[in-house]
Length: 237
Image (cartoon, rainbow, N blue to C red; front, side, top):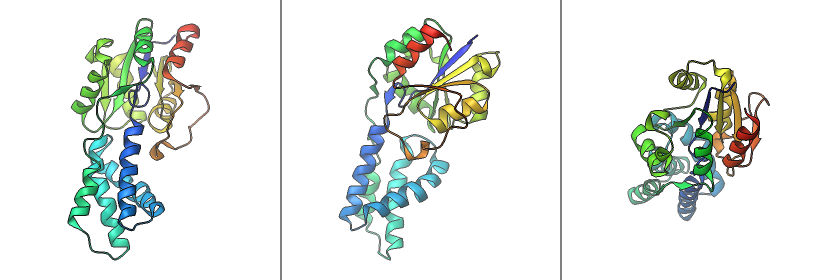
């Protein structure tokens, strides 16, 4: 029997990845104008800078101003070029204020309302700045469906923080919980590692950080959140 369904927020209910992609494309374009090969800029940003700055600043958009500037700084160092303070500032600025109002995916809020009308449902999201993320969740209209006490924002989704969320919302064992989300790293794997069930909402745009294999194939997958909800309502978890 399903006692709890946890639903991811970013790129499950609202489009987030496209805003990050557009910001990164603007950075790589600016770096190309400065004479740095795009392939090298990708490598330095994705493989060197981002892993470090995720640890320093956590998930969410606030690290990008710092990581964008640092990408330029490291490229200059690699090429033996002096840094230009104005260019460094311009690169950092491309990582500021790019998110805008949350763009809700088609049918997502209606599906969430139908799901919450049948199963105990909660939002399980991750971000380094809790109040900022809660504001985005409110702006998307989630709190018109779920009370704020049904929302949990953690710094990073792991097996341990997943289990904390389960214990926060229910006294049942993890096997009675279903996690619905778009990320293998952050949604599917932590749930499976904790002994819970998982449903993948297939990512329309894979973030390089999320591009990890699932720990098992014991999960369902659907193209969209409304389709995942339709399955749950028709067939159960």
